[in-house]
Length: 382
Ligand SMILES: [Mg+2]
Image (cartoon, rainbow, N blue to C red):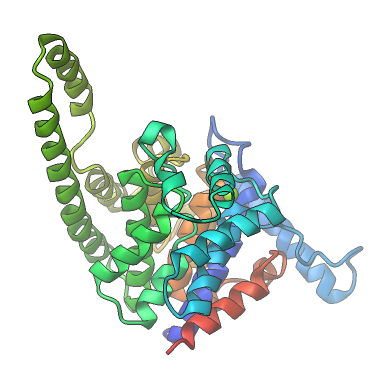
């Protein structure tokens, strides 16, 4: 039976929590190499055995809340609660929630540079909530995945309020700009929030059309960004009349040319190649081509890929449902395991709904009840 919209809302936020909590077990242990499905299967079987033992009363100790959530969920909760409380976006309120949450529990694994933003926000008394993030990395802004990892509640809010793509884009951009101002961080967050909204709306998943829809939206965004970049370049060239300056900008533009003009579209096209293959690709190929790292461009595509690929059977993950496969496959690739799994988990949860998330998995994760409550409140917004 198809999941109801309420179950899909619950699946999104609980799926995100589960991905974060279980994924964090391997975070940082696996930057250099893959985790592999064997280790993930072992961990999941332990979770399930502990649950069974506690149900039967044979466990030494109840293993509830055993796995703690990290910065991903700490920030996603703030996004959800701020949208609920204000029945819309209040950037100042959201910036305050991010910062206070960080100051309350600073040991959730926040990245070093984002903590600078939180301190600057508090020190400036939230006067201009976008300025501290703009000042990052000598004015370039961060291109990390911190915007995308927390954005799934925006996809729910957009669906509830029947927002069109441009409204979702605007909402996501503002939430991201509070900490990440680089265009790739913003585009990654938009791709992620739209993937969540699209998954909520999808009853029968057709991988090709799901991808094509994402590509068509990213094409517009990336074309705009490219035009903006060319305009800035032309303005700079006008200013730099000296030969020396011209030489300098020439060598810089050669460097820039190495980057594809449509980086997210290029990665989405790679996803299509990977999912069309009959055999599961070598995990190292996924890591090289899509990335499972801290940049948004090197993690959001992997999360989408894991959701899509896991909708089909995976030999090493037999007897696992599609939600379980999504999380387990995402973690098995290594890298930024909690963030890739939380993003993949929210998309999978949005599509399949809460029923596919095993209760043993839910019960071992801190923050699951809060995620349920937030999902229900977002669903009940009018
Ligand atoms: Mg984290």
